[in-house]
Image (cartoon, rainbow, N blue to C red):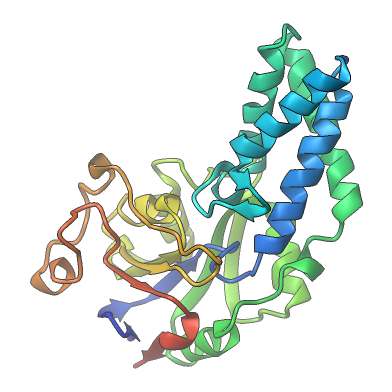
Length: 276
């Protein structure tokens, strides 16, 4: 087992680290802003309605995505939600105009596919954040498994690992029809079983409430990564997701006066080190 240390906290007895991808390992902010704009525009154009109504819907789509004045909310739908969740959100707006649900969902899916073609490939536009390679190498040298559990599609996670030659990543899972979504209450259990490690010997590193909730499904430790966005995310989760939170003296001391905050956080993976 190994020790993972950041300026705010030291995590002992770690056998595996589960990384989020977008905003934690990958710099995705500029890409997501453009993606949200293109998706909003192409979806609005699919709707058989007057130009004024299309424009109003496009504005609503941008707001739903968490986009405002050319900036993105790191805790918003586009930054955190899966592709399917984004499709459902926009389809709900369209259904409210009187279009049937199945037709609305198909319309959104068509627009999203068009946006993919406009912006493809994603992987070349989402470079590694500073410190990623060094930390992965340290973890490998210490015998710690490094894996990715992401709300992005499984195809995009695979492309990311391959494009940046992340040979230290021993396992990864993205959203697909054949796997549990990251937000499923058994997602951590499933990942740990695949890795043959206990949750309490696992460290989750991520940038959102979804990552924090994932960690606390089974008392895994958590390190919030806030440096992947221009507007640092405030990482918190509903109190009922923290029932399994660590309660040792060392872990409790790292939690702020608000009991729903992450165990520890860092603004850069360059500040994180691992050793035996």
